[in-house]
Amino acid sequence: MRTGIFGARLRKSLVVAGTVAAVAVVPSAALATPGTGVSGTVLAKGTSDGRLKIKPPKGDTDVTVRTVTIAPGGSTGWHHHPGQLIAVVQSGTLTRTLDDCSVEATSAGEAFIEPAGRRHVHIGRNLGAEPVVLYVTYVLPAGAPLSVDEPAPECAQD
Image (cartoon, rainbow, N blue to C red; front, top):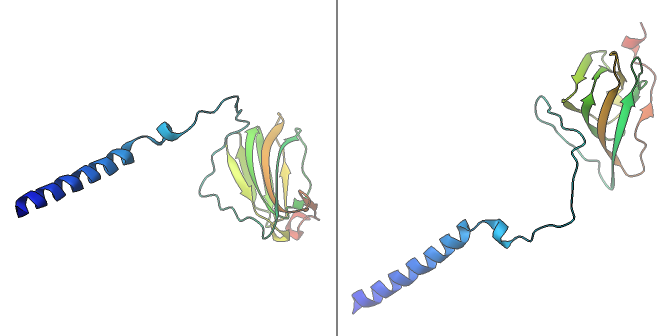
């Protein structure tokens, strides 16, 4: 009789294990509800060279998304951002001069992050013949401006 009880328990355990396994492999879409009346448009897509490290501000955060267009020969002026921003270059090439006077060029299809704070003063220029179009997401402390004008750093005043 022990074999009968043991066999029944084994069968019951196998049935329970099989049921759990079957539920685990059922696609989650079977439990999802289909969406209706929703559409989306990709405005810009860019690839960064390396890991993007996002540091949201402490406290309430404003998230703003906007398009920035810089005409050929135009510039942003020297400035910094009170919070980080993520930018994707949709068209053209943006040439940024950073606070240490190093230069970074970012072309269409590339993405970058600008860090927050006065230590990260920079200027963006369009040195090309076509407009530079950026899609920018700002992650700022609530109520902060998108950017703050700054004088050129000492290395840029030569």
